[in-house]
Image (tube, rainbow, N blue to C red; front, top):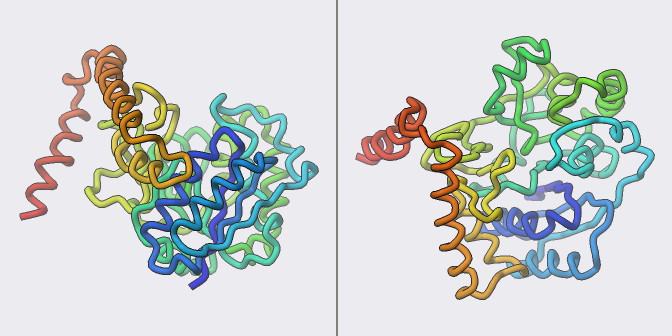
Length: 311
């Protein structure tokens, strides 16, 4: 089964994108059916070679590099958002145009690790809707802030399934551009805010295990023991020294399967130093974390409830 997968990133995120791609290929039931569409403003030839080498370790997936037209992106240049987001984050708004021969695709951020079979996502029944995704960890607050229907599905845009045919037929990309032009001054969550505002009540909700958003042990959108996709949200990323990110081991497992693999001795040394820094950093940042009810809820759901379920 063909699985079109779109990733949008620049040179700075290439090695992390490689980990995402390795995780997809490692867990896919049909690796040869995977087609990676890499949307980028420019990658070095060395980086492209490393990405291709990473993929070909797992078989013969197809890979193409797509450089978007600057005219299509000019409308998003004045939007202010988080400093750690690059302009590449807006590429996903024009995927149907960038990939005119694609009927359906899965979009993924490059701070994700896929543990499920990607064919499950690509075979999602869309029920006549253009987009499908998983509810954002702060959906309730975001809907209230943006004046959206409380009942609408407000997704985290780090993963979604897109019916490209419907997006083209319904002129949704033009609607994205119009919303961005009219609301540039009040957009704070970039493309995610645009997608959810324009497609209000027109997005299919997917099971939460397909985008488990994590920032720490306590900060998780879902406490499942078996996530199918892990999304390292916000500033806290596993590869940042001293990061206290839950499920970070999964990132390093797949990062070591890429062409950016580190020598094992150096990798182990750096990881131990980072873990020590993470513990002290978290205590300093959250000195009263043991007094937070949410901390004990996380303990219960992670260890006690899971143990009960196993029995």
